[in-house]
Picture 1 (tube, rainbow, N blue to C red):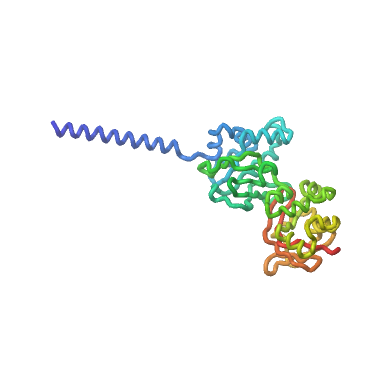
Picture 2: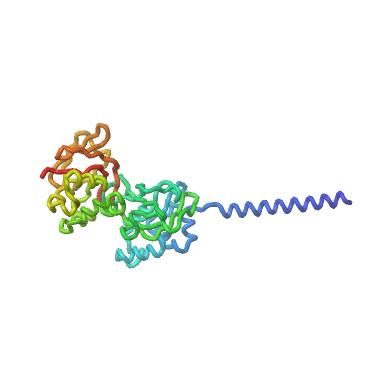
Length: 325
């Protein structure tokens, strides 16, 4: 009798364990990661993003297997974007434009917040300047992550990071990230503050308007760093931008710009003579690394390349180019 009772108890315990195991399996299956779109659908603050992805035909992409990073604007961010651009609602945004704007929020690799560092990454968007080189995004890692200089520069800031999905990760942002112009990218990177000051010093020159627009675009800009400008001022013995004659500053800035061409680094050749917006040439050299010999015989190294903007491309140089006066 005791044996039968013991076997009955053991049987009931076994049933209970099996039930608990099945229950745990059900819980685990319900907690399996969902795709980026599925996760976004569960967040009421991302309903505008979900609607935009559907309108642009990108839902299938972000539902597919892969490894993406999506900087996801909130409903408030979309509302501000529509108002600023003069659209009555999301349906009023042309599909091709909406698609590129959305792709400008997507990276083709999964990047968690701990993996973000200050610098350039590539989005999936394409501007009008290039059909092959996708738009660059500048990430500034500090106490938070600013994208393309933040909302005041057409970018955004990450407000909630690392929402996991089966095919990547979502970082919620406070703005819709516009396709950055050359000026947007220059403003976003703190290594270009002197260049931005030079471009805006004489408002009558119209440089900011030119490099923000599409007239005479695409542009190729060889952008000197802050250190390059400091060395330039020492070399030329000007006490600062204010001491440089207006015509000298204007010609010097134009000497760093090529109009009507989006020249990627792969298109640069050894001994190539480049005609600039200033009407003077410089020569490209590739021996020992890419460099430029200016009209004054000075050599500047090209230290970073192919920062793609919506209206052109930026290559970074370590010395200000000096035309002949």
